[in-house]
Image (cartoon, rainbow, N blue to C red):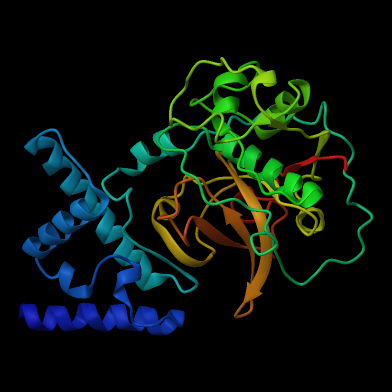
Length: 352
């Protein structure tokens, strides 16, 4: 016998309540962007889609485009809901990427060009190897060394945002001044080994900053979410300098934490898993490989409810994840770490 709408609604609500209870979360459906009732009929999903369009200011050029986006939205919604019923330590939610297919999302928002064979050519020797003990937790946001979350848009410039976050961090630690720096300068001007919106590598960007005498402030060279022309002259405004950079020994979480206890790091991860697109909160321990494709910044580490994690600053805006951040599980027992986070970490140095 077919379930009545009321029975179906009750079952959906029960499974949703069970998920939140199991996750230790308050029963606040607003954090995932939908309620069990939204899934009970096609009309309600359409209403949810219209509400989502209004919330995120989406504009479609035609009815056909809107219908296509609705079908993708609906598929993503079901993926989010099914995942939330299975996972325990993190949860997914609707966000501004919910009308993008996963292939579209990967093509627009990832942009790391990995060349492991050459990245250590100019790196200095790891200088935190003799650190004997580190704090149980560190959060560089609370220490004033992390700027607000930024948004790379649909330009594959994650490598520039990762680089800048690390430079902003060491500059604040050394000088006491938290200064937002220019990703756009790297996108426009660092073209020898990096490729603007088509990807790049953080070590090459550190080398550019060193060899070109520093990096401009964000206010003097603002981000435009696309490639521009490199025109700014260094003498026209103040720049922030670094003196060198180091690579963290590969596949060593111990080394990564030693460095992270002392400053924010540029790190690379594999972010092409579908759950990354809709991550909304919790300690992420979902499926991902180690084929690095996204540059981010590690800005701390800690533990909650027996789960150890690394605090990662992303560049997909403050509406994604935990206000632009993701907590990624550590102590996984795998040398490369979750999503390969231990494979390619590096950081700049600055003389006092």
